[in-house]
Amino acid sequence: MIWSAECRRTLRSSRVLALLALYVLIALVVILAAAFFWSLASQLGETQRLVSTGGMPLPILVAFYLSLFFLPLYVALMGFDQVSGELGPRSIRYLTVRARRSSVLLGKFLAQTTILLGLVWLLDLGLCVYTWVTTPGFGAADFGLNLLRFWMVSTVFSLAFLALTSFCSTLSPNPAVSLLINFSALLISFLFWTTARMDEGNPLRLIRYLSPLRYSPRLLYPDAGDVAGAVVAYLVFTVLFLGGGLFILRERDL
Image 1: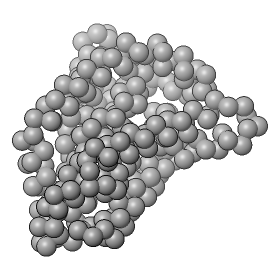
Image 2: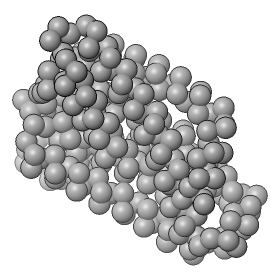
Image 3: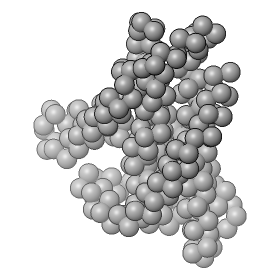
């Protein structure tokens, strides 16, 4: 019930169209920024393993990875007020009369996930169509395989950040404060990720494992073991963030 109602409310909102346009704009920007990313990836030692498979040209693969890098910001803008928007005016009390607090949070989380994955699928479809038009030998089998691959990678990657947004949205009854907390958490995650550039003997390099961004390149590795490890890491982050949001919502006086 919560899931279907939230999906309808979100689809009727003009914010979805605005964010879709923003996401398309981001996709264009990341293609132009591919050269910068490749330089950064070389410094982090990821270029030896981030390789093209399934007939997908490397520039498109780089553009897709960069779109993942901006995806957490997109998620934050889309769902920062999913809970805090109802905590402020206390309208959430009417929901909790008919449903458990855990159902309210999970329903909102699943609704945001559904909408986001639909929008992400459109972007991934656009990348595959562009590759199909511009790359000789990129056939129907490559098209379907890479579209499915991109969409599944986006799904796994998005779950942790969707859960983080849900968690941040429970921390304050003020949507603006929730958004600020969310952006701060993303900044901290980015800073943790950059510790990978420190010297090998520096113990601070271990902090990088606390950042969800640390595992994103592994989702594109050709080795199944690396991919499985990254999937497990994102599922752990998702459970931790959602569990934290559920705990706060249950303890909060509505």
